[in-house]
Length: 264
Image (cartoon, rainbow, N blue to C red; front, side):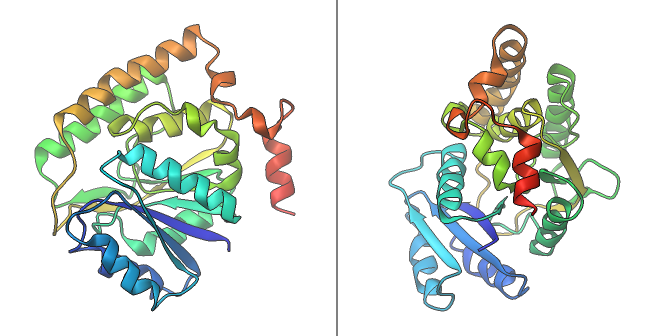
């Protein structure tokens, strides 16, 4: 039980079976956890049927109602940590993230010294396909805005295709992550960076979804704009480091020691 991919879903019946098969057919040892927020289109039932085909490697957590992307991932992070996984991935269900890139993110964390590997659209070799110009402008503008405000050395700050070493998620106080949508991805990267973990961006090609409906809306964008300002303010004038640090790992938590022990 080394690698697990967390896929949050809401009305993804057109994509969920195909994305699960695509990951499993690579035969790279990835397990999958689907977090479904009460999809009325039957997404969860499709996953339940497939669990019989992939016993012990495909799992489903059902939640009542649409509770938000951030809470879905935090639910998944806690589940994966409790089950003992060492490399924990975030991934969309709609094939905007190429399943074949999972292995590249894994290699970045396993063998190339990264604690957090980000599938990045905005480093050399990365890019987007079939994405509307307004979405590209919003995404690039949002990442540039975030870098200018926070000084975080990440080009694709809103990326949602990520591999975390479990030590990173154990070190972060996940209950203190405040944002649910657009800003969730930013806050997780910011917390990992502030706690001293090494972040590496791996170039990917992001392709717009072919089936289903995008979950982006104005409220998510507003949260991102205001959330970045709040993160910066708190990191300057409040003890953000200690607020985000998971004290259950011990006050003497040392990131280097934890990672060294995990690699023995």
